[in-house]
Each structure stands twice: as structure tokens, then as C-alpha cells.
Image (tube, rainbow, N blue to C red; front, top):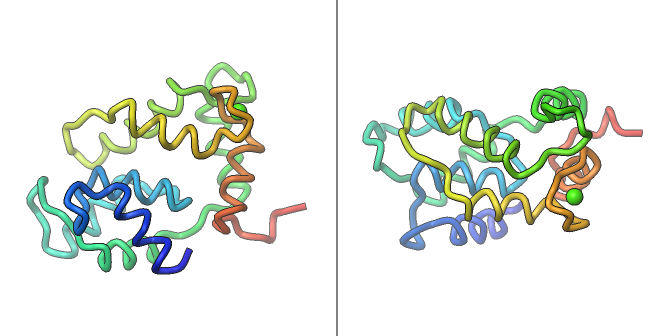
Length: 155
Ligand SMILES: [Ca+2]
């Protein structure tokens, strides 16, 4: 994604149109096709000298963070998918997705609940056949479309 697209995504998630909280940063990164570890976000905020949990970063800082997060490989994605698809149904449903996102959020130490709206936004963006669940192919296609899977493992 180029700067313009990144900033557009920031604007979508920002409360004030200029900055992002950790939670907003997390959502925005997901929407930009990244698969961030909550600890990566927390570490970045700390590195920028933002210790306060209510602290925010600018869109420029977001771009730096975005570029610092490595893109997942297909193998890593498959592994993650299997872990999250608890009932082995071949799809990730909304509850499973929420749990994934919430667990990652929890590791930041920020005591906050992910709202349904954020989960829905992420789900809807990936769920191309609109059946309310995410198949591996939908997830992979989404990431491919956004250019965030490394090419070497693709068929
Ligand atoms: Ca689906």
C-alpha cells in the first residue's frame, strides 16, 4: 500500500482524523493487510516515547510502524489458520475471529474489549462470499490482493 492508501485507512480508524490510539492502530493495521502482534504495537508506542495507554501516534508514525511489520508467509498463514479454526471446520467464524483479535489485543496489557463493530468491519472486508465465515482461501485472497503475502510459497 502507498502512503495515500495508508493514510486513508488511518482516517477511517482515527477518532479525531489526525491520530490513532493503540486499538485504532491495531484495527487499521489489520485492514491494511498486516498481521500485527499486539506486542509489536506496544513496543512501537513505547519506542516513540508514548507510555500512556491513552497516547496516540500520528499517521506518519503509523506508516513507519506499518513498514516495520513483516509480511506473513503463506506457511505462517496456514499455520495460524489451523490454530484458529478450532472446530476444524475449514472456516473461521466471527467468534473465532473475535477471539484471535481480542487475544492479541490482550497481550498489549491494555484492558479493553474489542467492539463488535471492529470485528464486523474486518470480517466483512475479508468475507468475499458473504457467508459470515472466513475460509482459508478468502483470507489468502484478501492478503494477496493487498500484496502482503510473500510470493515464494504460492502455486
Ligand atoms: Ca466466507
